[in-house]
Length: 402
Image (cartoon, rainbow, N blue to C red; front, side):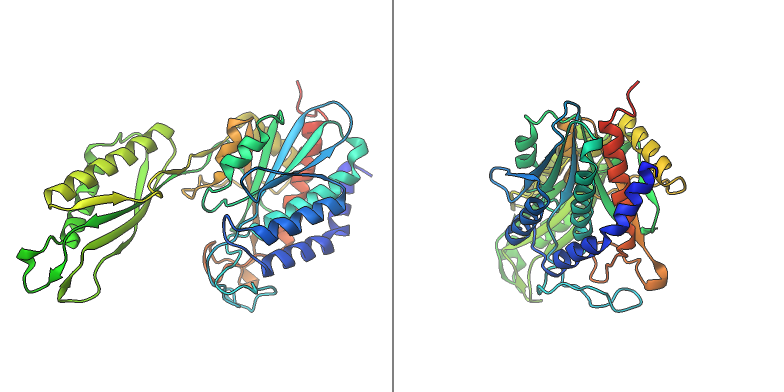
């Protein structure tokens, strides 16, 4: 029996565990940076498997170590563990879901429950294959991917682990089950958060001359930013500005004191993103000043995530493993303008981030992530597990060494 056949057999053998893990995690989600019970549950499951659990400092995140006891390379395999403050619908785009969150207003609408179940299953199989491996594997459970709240603590935790490579993945409802994408180069955009208050002086709408209207100033700020994007940024470096919310005032005859603005920038070049954020701040302050208003930027106005860029050589190795275990699974995919905290692992070692298909249109599973109707077909997890196990085994056993 080939090793690929062994891997696939074990995936089927342990699939009931995969479903059990995914069901519990889906039904009991916790929002970013507050994953207390989730981390407790995951640590307990890792300890049951016989892994050495080590908590990272100042985070709910932790690592679980599989040490083969034989000298060799060290690889990290990462999952995110947080959920979103989104109330889940009991239905996808067609049918009633098989599993739904039990926590009001919170759900795994981005599929992180499937990522955790994937990693636990991967760990269980690699433990079975331990005698055939050499080196070490750190299974990484990262807090707060949606907010970027846990990546710095995890990078600090891992900096002395001497990782040779780090692997991660993300489900995609827009890809069919059995399809996996592995991009060489930019995988996800960087993100800068934007939030500021335009401070004026409120009063009765009948006497705007006695007020300093933050709404008028805000309107001019938005227009000025549009012009700045054309005239002040390098046109060869893409940076998008997505305006998400403007909130100010509540009555037709009352001028408010404050108007709040929220949005994000997305970019693929670190410096271009940093420069764009500075342009946004300066234009906002100067335009507000011209309208006699003040500006208060919140702590969210910062670089939340830098671009996730796959190491091209490591990505090629992953493609080789994929082609070996699932010859017809590879699917080309576009770079995502969404952002990922996975960028942090590239500071430590070559890293690669893949996407695996969980879509099933016949079952109504094709709604985008971060929506109440989001759903996934757990059959897709089998392929994610298969590639993780196959690549980890190939990498540690020197299959890609020249």
